[in-house]
Image 1: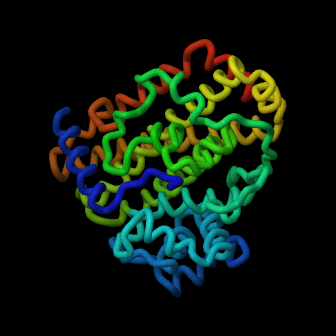
Image 2: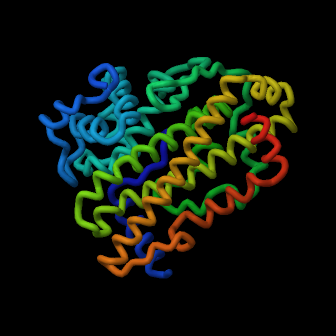
Image 3: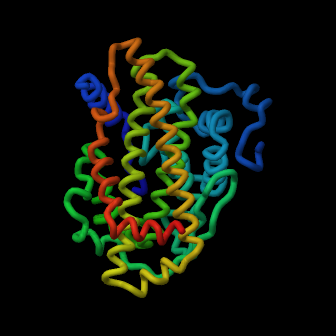
Length: 333
């Protein structure tokens, strides 16, 4: 599994939790359809069942980056859509509720073709507008080695969804085949980027959802995915910085080689910057949703009450500590 995601059933539970918390306080070549093609095919209606065609229509209309990545994934891997509907969401899921996941997984396929079975020594980190950075791998240690050094407050066990918590999935890696583990910091960057571009798609679909009725059913997935991605930013930023801090202490040669990797530093810097921008965009859109739902259902979605925010605050506070702030500056200068 390369992404923790909500199943349809889990999403309904997430909605209940969110409500409870709230009440408490280019054309073919580029992966895009032309305007004429979008018009001719028509953008899917709300809750239209997910399909390859509906995915491409929605992304082409609203998210050029997601469309570009997804067309690449669908063209390069004939089983990509089957994999999505087998592992991440139901074949009868509403299309708009799947695009965060679709773009996330398409990012992985773009970064390392045949992502699950490839044994490459580099990855392409997508940075937007059809541009990417090829990052060659240097020596790494497995991420699970640093697991015991992660303080309990940062082990994100507060991620209380059926699909599990990210610390166990991506760092402890009980499966033994997570790229976030075996590829070390390069695998962590790969996941960081996946969640970033998934969040981008979720944000871009705001204007699509805004056409429909202002009820919680319209916005539940937008909020669930947005809050999950928001936490992922804090988690993977921390994992990457802690990986480097642990390497500096226990594997100085590995630390020096990673730090000397200019393409890695650039890819991390641009991904972190873009992800922070997506969070800012989401928070602004969430404020608008808050107003819509308050009018229609007397629901007050205050930031400090939304689920996952507490853990997000713990993680963002942690990376401000000097040992991490120093590494952050070294990676982004």
